[in-house]
Image (cartoon, rainbow, N blue to C red; front, side, top):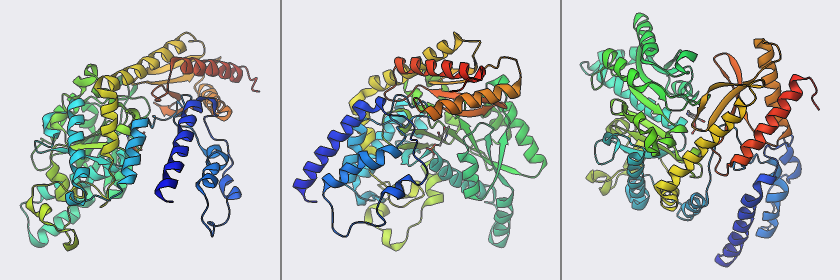
Length: 499
Ligand code: PLP
């Protein structure tokens, strides 16, 4: 493809993409293809002779579209959103054009420097304490996902803990102590932490314990519950070294009680002393709300914690992937992840004046992801992004208010939070098993029909449905439509009259 052909092809592709977005609400939101559908309609191998773009592009509508679940559709109310925007797409386009696995500063200084600048902007916007800024001892780095961020900080926490608690030893004694401690150290999360913490513990080769939460605290982790598990671990000779706290849990968007967690840790594992517990704040989705002053009180305890991560690609209009990880001490990441083979040596790295982000992450190579964040921040501005978040939170309240008008059919589990509403269907006769059965049946039927797409979860042992109103194209009318579908389906299922 030469420049002229690229210009034509790109114009045609952009036309098709714009048209897709303009009409997306008319498409069935969940794909209903059979597993293996694509293999049946694609040839057994690539063509011997190259094809024209026109030939290739035809297959987008004919072969790919049927197998897409349309995450950008306003009828997509499942999971948390993966928001896309035109400035975000332009960022991806330029990133592709400038392709460079810019692992060291000199591999493309702009890639490193824009990331540092944009993440400092973001840290201030999210009201993170100054210790998370690159101008102090901290800094931000873009990871691929919140899960990747958790593995990264857990490895840094593990090495920091082992180093600090064995610093008085040397030689074989040191090796033995590290080997023994590695078998005793524990990563902690709560029952409502995202599964990525358990997965990270699996990858880091450490034990995992989850701390109980209850309906009384709206499924948030408290210092008292943490204290109980710390005491248990001590009694069993286990050593907690890491804790995930969450701002916006996946099931209900609960916010952990950061202040009581900080005061419990001050008592049991004081910060900045050997044996301290690294606290990570997983704000993958709801952390976006911190750009609004009315949520910024939530960061008050973060100066006592060690890392924070928020996905711009969930709620803040930045195309996947852009998970923004901030650490209080960049040295902790570098100590755990830096390796300097001769082929990566260069005068700039050795000068100590530049950041080499390869030392802040698992992979070596990295994409130019800060471009899309920069484009999004500049296109919408702070006010535009605040309005975006507030609008979605309002839609959640509208949807919850609609559910309240049919208390005979719906029971809200936890107050709508961060554009997430969680509820179950009320059975005709109060019975827990029957309630779970009909809630599950309604959920499955709604998704099978594919007019809207929602997800389910189990909260406090109760089967629930989750509706998220934070899709970039969300509007109150789509939530009213979803409510109508849910009423109709719940009545059908309750009356045993499923079409
Ligand atoms: N943390 C929370 C609270 C989440 O809700 C999710 C996913 O929705 C994750 C972590 C994992 O996110 P990622 O897909 O970026 O790894």
